[in-house]
Structures are given as C-alpha cells and as structure tokens.
Length: 409
Image (cartoon, rainbow, N blue to C red; front, side, top):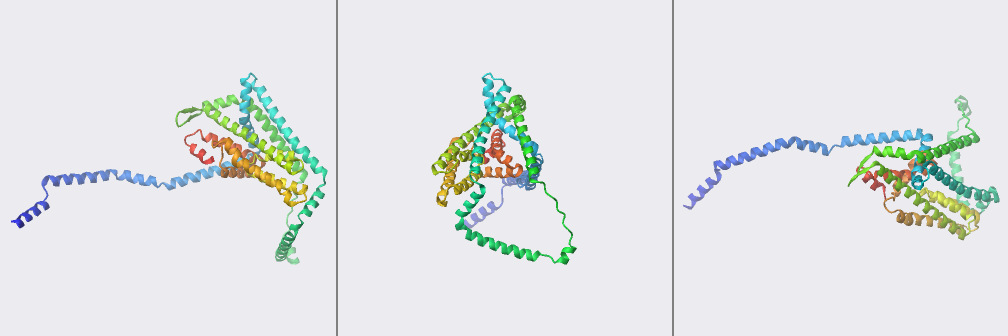
C-alpha cells in the first residue's frame, strides 16, 4: 500500500496539470517577447556607453582649435596686446568711473580724471626706480663693481677654473674632429653670411613699437571707460545666462565679472604695496643701500606670482654682494626677501582674497608660461588678470562652473 501511494504521488508530480502548463508557456513566451523587444535598446545603450571614437574626435577638434587660436594670437600680437591691455585696465577702473558718474561727473571727464591719476602714479613709481638706480650706478664704476665681486667670489674660482679647463678640452677635441683639410675646404661651398641689423636700429624699432602700443592702449582705455557702458549694455541684453537657481541677466553677469576682477586687482595692488614697504624696511635694517628702490622693485615684481619673487631675490643678492664684504652677511638680504614673499603668498593673500578668487598655483604658472612665450613681457603682465577674468566668467555658466572650481585653489 505504501509503495503504491509513493508511486502514484511520484507520477502525479511528474505529470503537470493542464492549467499550470499553460501558465508556464505563457510566462516563457512573455519573457522571450520582452527580451526581443528590449534587445535593440540594450545594444544602443552598450554602444553609447563606450563611444570613445566620438570623444577622441571631440578632443582632436578642441586641440586643433587651440593651436589655431594660439597661432592667430601670435601673428596678431602687435594689435591684440594693446586691445587686451586696454580691456583689462578698463575693466579694473570701471567701478571708479561709475562712482564718479553717480556723483554727477560726466562720463568723459570721469574717464579722463581716472586715466590721468593712474598715469601720474605710474610716472611717480618710474621716477622712484630710475633716479635712484642711475645715481647708484653712477656712484661707482661698473668695472670696479665687477672686480669687487670677483674678489669676493675668489673661494669659488678653483672649481670654476677646473670646470672651464675641462670644457675647453672637450671643445678642442670636437674642433679637431670636425676640422677639414685645405683640399676639402677648397672644394666646399662658401657660406653666405647675412649681416644682422645693428643694435641701434633694433633698439629704435622696439622703442617705436612699444611707444605706439602704449599710446594705442591709453586711447582705447579712454574710449572703453568713456563710451564702453553702452557697449556693455548691448552685449548684456543679448546674453541670457541660466544660473542654478534663477536666470541671471547679461548685465548682472558682466557686473559680477567686473566687480570680481576689480576687487582682485585692487586687493593684489594693496598687498604688493605693503610687501614693498616691508621689503624696504627689512633691507634698510640690514643696511642695503637704496632700500626704497628695492622696495618699489619688489612691489612691481610681485605682480608676477612666484617668478617675480625669484627675480627680486636674485637682484637683491647681487646688490648685497656689492655692498657687503662678508658673503654670509650679504645672504641675509635675499633670505629676508624670500621669507617676506613666502609669508605674503602663502598666508596673507589667501586669507584676504579668500577661496573665491584664489587661483590654483599650477594653473597660474602654466598661464604665465603660455602668455610669456606667446607675447613676451606683456603676456607675463596680462597672464594673471586674464586668468582671473576667465575664472570669473566661467562661474556664470552652469556648464563651466565646475571648470572654474578646478582652476581655483
């Protein structure tokens, strides 16, 4: 009996009921149908998730556009440098002109007064640099200074002489290996020598170009300050920048960039002036001659982040070697200079400017390198203001706000 019951239950479990079989068939058919319907979508998702050829094509396009833009900036440097300098200066001086116009001064008169004040301050700074420097150079002949420097560096002459002797032996060996016989030299073609331009003509040409560029920059700055408000308003009306919370108008976006850049330049100017005063006091205490001259130099060079401090320390080192007999005591002046610039760059400027306008040091160095290579000394001066303008403008777009965060410190 028990065996019959087991065999019967086993048979019943093996043989499915008709309704259950229909349900299973229906589930299988629906599953297959859903897989078939979803197959193209799944394939498309897999294809788009690994769309690296399109990304590579986009990167190549951006690289080609960057190279073409760099070439255009290099070719048109003589025209673009005054225009960019005028735009940066007008952007920085715009709040002053606006305050004067609010007080009832006509816009043209306000622009003229602002430019005259800035130009007068630049002339005063130049006089503070040129007059003491020329007096210090005329006080002692250059030859005597060079002999004095050689006498102080006598302990280092032994190693330098051995290095010079080794380099001379190497150059003699290379010259012997490349020397040709008289027969070979007679058969060889005669080189064509192109006479270079004289130094006087080069100086006159560069001076004329610099004077023309400075005059053009001043004229453009005046017109940007006097008549730029209407142009900014027209540009702002055509801009509709979507913010994360609301829609920001073009006028408010330009006003934000203008306020940020002017605040940045004004704050950096005050900080650099305070640094120059501290450097002048430190060098005066040490006993370096013309301490005020080197303080003004420190103020101007500090507009070139990182690089300006190294240049200033090198100049102060040479002046200290000329002024003091002891090399150890002469090292106090450049050490004090570097210490003050390090405190300013790492503690004072970040605490005053805050993280909103604190730029990434690596990006600053790359910007200085790029613009100096592209436009020379003018590019080195404009590198940091252009980077600050670019970062401030990127903060106004949702798509580029993350880029602004990456470029900031």
